[in-house]
Length: 265
Image 1 (spheres, rainbow, N blue to C red):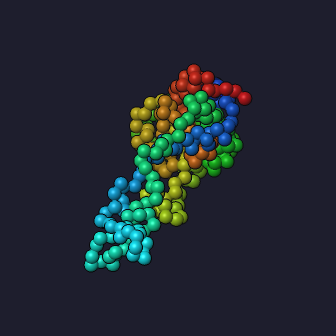
Image 2 (cartoon, rainbow, N blue to C red):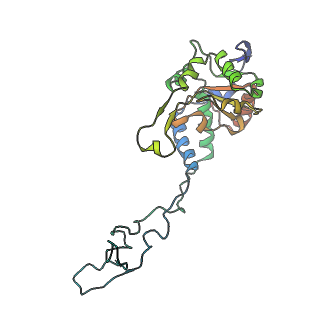
Image 3 (cartoon, one colour):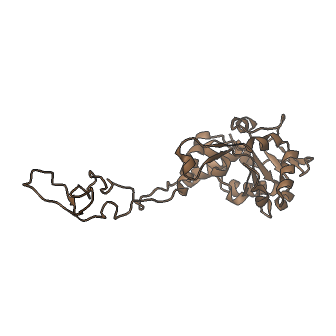
């Protein structure tokens, strides 16, 4: 059983939890499927076919007492008669470069994927594992947090912030408001800041709540039909603080119970 909360922070009623929340807690399985799903976001890459072949080269052949490496046919530069074309020469082609034809997407067993999703959902009902991820919960938090369906029509950021604070997540929002500059070269490659992951709001329909959550650091909104291990276990660590709408729970139950993925301990 869990509590259904109103948007102003009042208790509405007691709800039975879907059977998926009693699935086995398999952290190893969740992490494995997370890494496999992450590979589906990789972009194919490869070296340019003409790399290292931009200059005309000619080998002098044997009989001159010098290496038979092909020499650049350029004049008036410091590279005159220097080696080229081959991987051992400066400016030559790369050795066994990556090719865009390489299969970088890892395949996943369908049953394994469903079991990992069921386990990741079950982790959201464990206060112990949610706190292990660093989330700040109220003193006697009862997980998972379930709210009324009317939250899907919230369109203002300030209104959504007040709803989250009424649910006792004020400290959590404050924790996520801090961001740090990444150490190393990653800061030059489009990922300068490290942002903490905060509450995930799972809805059955989006009527503006995703736009309201855009300007709240760390808060994400996802549809129940699109819910993935990537959303529930950032970095491969399960136990993300998750808020469900009442109808989202019903949709998740239809999605997973019918697949037979929500086995009990």
